[in-house]
Image: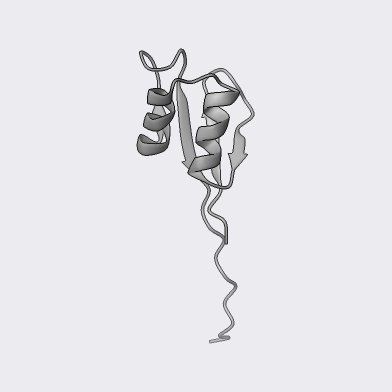
Amino acid sequence: MIAWLDLLTEGDLHPRRFASPAAVRAYAVKMERLSEEAANALTRDGQVGPPLARREYRLQPLPLPTAPRTDHA
């Protein structure tokens, strides 16, 4: 099961959803133009902001769905 990650960007109401920290990092470097240092901090710490990045970025893991109970106790 995939542990999805939402990338929340300061000033953007719509999070971007990713399947792995590597995918977040690739997006952050290419599309958000974060430096390698800022992208590493984001995936390592779950957030980055000034002075490493021009605005704040935060990762929010989505909870894994729980399996339905099969015991009818």
